[in-house]
Image (cartoon, rainbow, N blue to C red; front, side, top):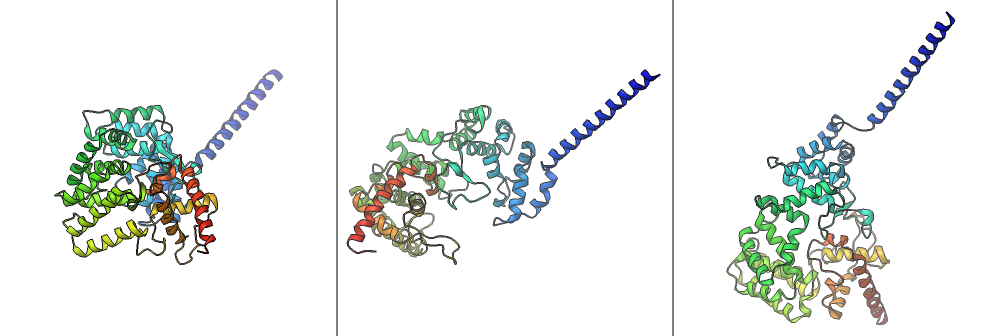
Length: 430
């Protein structure tokens, strides 16, 4: 009898312990699950998203969105790909934090019936090229948005973040001869298109650029393939200056297309800002004169069709080419280009140069000192090729921050800044 009681007691204890541990595990799991939001948890925040400017509501939604499982995250992302609410930031969050979704994005790319395949393709490529703010040269308010960091336009997709499976999908898409749209976009987003164009002769670049400019008709940014070709070939023509300047001057003077002539002006202006100061070399001075004649002649398309617009255009171009004043009506940024706005910030942040003014309360942000314009004039006199010191960068100004030689470029400018300041102090100039 006592033996049966002992066995019963032991079984009861085991049962109680089993129930106890089962409940403990259940509670623990519930606690862990509670920290991971479900889609319905993000729904209310999404209803209150602001339409035009970031707000705490946007941040609350994106924080919830970032913690969703990858399948749910992409479901929300799909729902926002065609939304006018650019501040939802879902694409940026997935790019920066959502590498666990890369295999799912790769599946979307391979699905030729999916309306999201091109969005997914671009997102995969940007995800692979993403650089967190910690790896960028200095903290700056240019890294705005829901994530801290930016995509590196100097990088070619190689799978470093998205992994071999998704990388294989990008390579597969870039080689699809039977699907030209998929192939073109894969090469564009991955960086391979720039490599393709870099291998062309200058004569071929000019021919293809001219054809694309006529077909694009000034519709940049609307997803037109010819506009994409034109944009990427812009970079080739800019990077190959001053060799490309005679061809551009010839088109400015003799090309019958107003679209070609107007966009050639844009390229010449970028060359002056990013490669070589035009007034400092003979080919550049000829290009300035070709621009002046093209503006005076008229017939430009699609923007500068009216005489008063062309008059204002030449005033701004002349101010840049001859007087180092990029924006003659912009007093706050000292009239300098965005490139030099960034360089002035970098000189201050990295080397302590006095290139910034104190914060302006009314503007809500810092401004650079007008002295920067005098420094640009000084650099033009000692070496007109100073814009392309260390590396050539024909793209958007902020993209230069991701170049591996950005710090060296700023260090070289700082050496000249010290000489510039010493020279002016010696003769009593401010």
